Length: 405
Image (cartoon, rainbow, N blue to C red; front, side):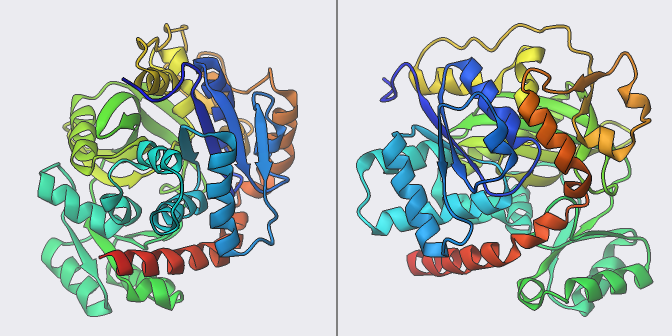
């Protein structure tokens, strides 16, 4: 029997203005949750109407104070589930889980962290591209050939063994930055030089993968203790600011191998929460796993329109009540994400009839926020502003994980 009440309480974390996060409170409220948000003031999340309680912390707060503030907030609002929505909050939640083990936090906080993360043993794996690729190889899912590279010689040897193009990926990067498609040796050496400008990350090693020609796709799911409760699959029709960047327009599909790979991998990880897996679909329709993001992505709130509301699946799993995932509402299979596709191209053909433009018209303050911030935010300069805080959290997390190993 579930220890959660019939009205479960979710805490949504946001430290950076990633566009998908502010769409989650309404989806959770509609599914029957009490919604609390936690983050910095001035973010888009503060423009959302469907929030029961908003807990704010100062941007000047120290690393250790931030971790303590999150754990205190979880107790204060009696959160049953905590959802990270950006890379900073992933690091924050994982750090809080490690600190909670050492600080005598209440049983309710430990239970919430368990529901939110699943098997914490694999937290380093879901944060790391290299560790995830090695784990995927162990469980036998289809993926490109890969290797961890620590020197230029390693990268050149990988290219010699497998041929070009080579995909080189830096750890701890987002929005497609730190991903290089190297079509020859000149491009590979240039990518290595650029990656080496962050010495600590370069020293930790990069992931090299063979290039799979095809279409980029993703599957976002809700999971509890390794059991996939429901999911949505889509092809990325448009991305911004590059081919390796986030999607701005998608087409929803069904794909058996993407579904099977997702279920196999997350089951073996004992994962809980939202996850989004990226794939390359080759000319024969085979799905190659290329990445896992341990958070929701901007299509996660759309499930109810397609008859698979991820938030309702989580509600049913937490409360033990029957799942009511929603009925399909006739949403076109193609969806232009707002404001992403509008910023990418105001004259986009995807903004024409026959494509659903996902504007939250019923939340005018949020629309205003998207419009005022869209142009500057989608240059992604603000992602770099979080580097110092993220580095501090990474250092703390590495120390705690080393002590526990």
